[in-house]
Image 1: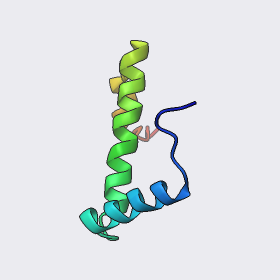
Image 2: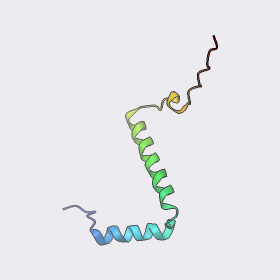
Image 3: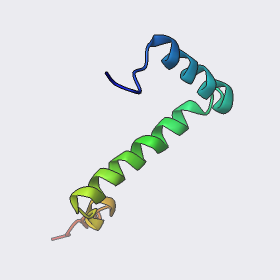
Image 4: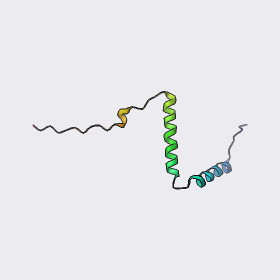
Length: 66
């Protein structure tokens, strides 16, 4: 038997409390921040470092006049 078994009423109550605390307008921001945090944690756990090149925009190539 699981000690923290959650049914639909418990999940609904948690969602309602989150809506009251953050409001409907802030939920996308909170979700995005939570997702970024989870991704960063997983990368750190695996020992992977982010490539700086992935975030740098490539310089546009200049046209050569003949």
